[in-house]
Image (cartoon, rainbow, N blue to C red; front, side, top):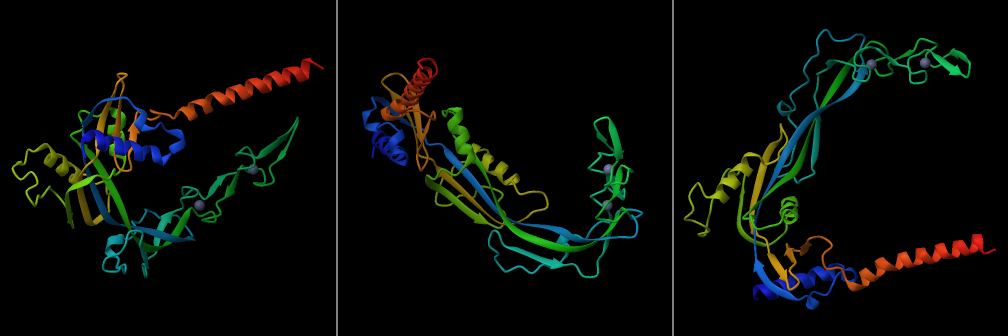
Length: 307
Ligand SMILES: [Zn+2]
Ligand SMILES: [Zn+2]
């Protein structure tokens, strides 16, 4: 398939997504079609996140200094050998009780009364009366620590398997901004040029002759290394395995006889600028509500004035 036929095929599939709203690509007067296939670099990381949650209990006092909680990575949390994304597990930390400030009242033991907003009195026109919720004090006892300002936390360590993805676009100089941004936001399919899996990917390791001649200053390799340095895994997450995929996104610059240009890209195909090539029926549909509104106004005028 030559570029013109391939671009038309992509446009036909794009029209089929919302056939009623989009123009028939067969009716376009196309002057020229240029392939612009940018490269999408997608790094997917599966990682384990851990944390501690507490079952809280009122303590008789505030702690003299806040104790650090247990390190969740030091707790034995039972996980299967290759846990799937979304898997969760937890383990109660036995024999540990953490003395902490109450978070609800910031260790104060009481809170501003919500009914009188701390004033102690409620205004009724010219008169006021003592607030019954706080008995005129303006503050109420904290229900969580029951006034002491301190809590005991009984920790449970949790683990959750999560996934994150970072995307960069290579060879994108010719692309308009909207296309560039769309390609940075999601995987747009395309032909896979290179794939790599590993516990921790640091660099582009080529096999099968893919750009074998390129050295360490090859811009694509530099881009991959930067991506691997910042894989988007939140602080404290432990990477379990990663997947790197480089794909050539199907993309064409289509120049029309009337001098305008549009871009068709990705799989499923998208068109930029958005809203290009509306169908003639949609253009008619946009006019019709105005006609209906004008008719309704005329009828209302008749109803009000004519009677
Ligand atoms: Zn009150
Ligand atoms: Zn409290």
